[in-house]
Amino acid sequence: MCGVVGYVGRRPVLDILVKGLKRLEYRGYDSAGVAYFDSDKLKVEKSEGKLVNVEKLLAGIAPKGLQLGIGHTRWATHGKPTTQNAHPHRTGHVVLVHNGIIENYLEIKADLKKKGYEPASETDSELFGFLVLDKMKSGKKLVESVRESFKLLHGFCSVVVMSEQEPGKFVAVRNGTPLVAAVDPQGGAFLASDAQALLEYTKEMIFLEDGDVLVGDESGIHISTLASTKDAGRKAVTLNWSADKMDKQGFEHYMLKEIMEQPMTMVDTLNSLLDRARTDPFPLAEQPGVEVLRSAKEFILAACGTSWHASLLGKYWLERWGGVPANIEYSSELRYRDPVLRAGAVLIGTSQSGETADTLAIIKEMRKRGVPTVSITNVRGSTISRESNYGFFTSAGPEFSVAATKSFLAQALVFFLWAGHLGLRRSKDIASQVQVIFDQLIKLPHLLESMLKPDGVMVRACEEAAKKFQNAKGFFFIGRGYSFPIALEGALKLKEVAYVHSEGYAAGELKHGPIAMIDKEMVTIVLVPQDSLYEKTVSNLQELKARGSKIIGIGNAGDEKVKKDCDVWIPIPVKSADKDFDESLYPFLLVPAVQLFSYYMAKLKGTDVDQPRNLAKSVTVE
Image (cartoon, rainbow, N blue to C red):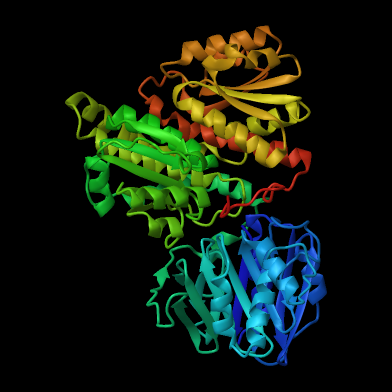
C-alpha cells in the first residue's frame, strides 16, 4: 500500500524522489518523507499529510556529491499518521523505508529494549533499522546486516535501507509487497513499489520476487536472494505503458480522465488478446492459458472489491455462453476455507494491480493443491502474474485514481472474450448466437465513445442527477441479471469517492427486507435496460415509486414508458427499437453511467476524488 522510491546515480535525486512519489499518490497515503545524502551525510525530511508539505521542506536544497536517496508515502497500519511515525526512519547512521507489516514486532521490540535501544515512533517499521544498526555495530557490512535482520521478520513486507557508514548504495529486500527496479540508462539504479514511478526514465523493469535482495549503486543493479549471495538472474520486462498517459491531460481529476478513456481501453484490450489477423469470431490469440480454459470442467473465480464484481459478470457469461460452472468467491474468505475441489477445476484470480494480498494467497494455495491457476491483471511482471500458472493481461494502462474504473471494464472484457470463445465449441445454436454477439462487441467502443462525449446527453444527465440528489439520505442501486453486478459496482463507487451510504441489490431482493428503508429521502438508481428481465425490473421500480423513493433510471434511449416514472433519466446509446442488441453486452454501457454519477457526487461534495480517505489502490496486506 505504501509508496516507495529510491535512486542512485547522476540525476538530481530530490527531483526523482518527489516526482516518483507523486506518481504513487494514487495508492493512498497519510504522510510522506525522503532521505538523501548530501556530501556523505544523511538528511531526512518528512511530514504528516500530503507530499506538498515535504516539497516545501525541500525547497532550495541541492545535495552535493553522489545523488542517492529514498522516499516514501505511508498508509498507516501501526501508529497514527504523524510526522514522527512518517518514513523514512532514522536509527543512528541507518535510514530505512518499509512497506507492509512486521507481525512479530512486539517480540522484536522487547529484545531491542533489552539491548538499550529506544524506538522514537509507534511504528513496527523503525524496529528494522535498529536490527540493522545492531548487526553493523558487531562489525558486519550493510548488505549482510540487512540480509540477517530481514530473516528475523515474520509477515509480508519490503524494506529499503541506507547507511552513512557505507555511502553510495541502497539495499532492498522484498517479501510479499511489490518492488520493481530499473537500471538508469545514464548510470545508476532506480527502485520503486510501482513501475509507474519510473516510466519517465525507462520502460525496462525488473520485478523483484519474494526473498530477493537488491543492491543499487552507481554501476547499476545487483540482485541476490536471502538464501544465496549468488546472482539471482532476474530478467527485465518491457512495459508498453507510455509516460504521457500519466498526467491528467486537461481533466480535472484522474477518475474522470480514466472513465473517458474506456473506449480506448476496450480497443487496446481487444487488440492485445485477440488474433486480429483472423476473421472468425472470438479468435483468442494462442497462448498456454487458452487450452486450460478450454479443458476446464469448473471455474473458481477469486477476487476482491471491484475485481469481484467483474468476476461476477464473468460467472454469468462463462455459464451462459461457455456452458462451464463458475463459482465466485471472495479471496479473503476462500483462503481460510477448505473448499471441495472437483477434478478439472481451474482457479481464476483477478486483480488490477496484480499484488492483492488475499488473491495472491489463494493462488499460491491452489497451486500447492495442484489446481491450475489463471490470472487477470493490468500489470505485466506483477506478483500474481508470476505466481499463477497462466497470465492474461488487460490493456487499461496506468490507472491513478484509487477508485477503479477503466480496469473494471477491461477485466469484464477478458471474461466476455473467454466466454464467447468457449461458446463457439458448444451447440450450433449457441455458436451462431456467439458469432452475432462478436460483431456487436467490436462496435461497442464506438458506442462508448459516443456515450462519453463531454457535452453528450448521458454525461449531462449524470451530472444533473448528482446535483438534484447530492443531499439525499442514502442510495439503493438495483438491477437484475447482467445489471446486478453493475448495481453492486455503482454502490461501491459512490461509497468510495463520495462517502455516501449506498447499497447494491438484486432487484428481486428488495421485498426481503431492504424495502423497509424506502422513504422520500431515499434515492433508488434503477438499471433498467430492455433485456429479458425488463418487465420485472419495471415492476420493482413501480413498487419503489409507490413508497416514496426518488428514482434515477438508467436504460435505453427513447424508453418513454420508464422515463416518465423517473425523477432523472440517464439514457444509454441503444435505442428502444433496437431489439437485436444482445442483453449480455449491456454492462459495458451501464457501468460508465454509474461511474460518472459517483464522480459528480464526489465533486459536488468536495471530497478528494482521486485519493479517497482510508483507501489504497493496491491492497498488499490483509
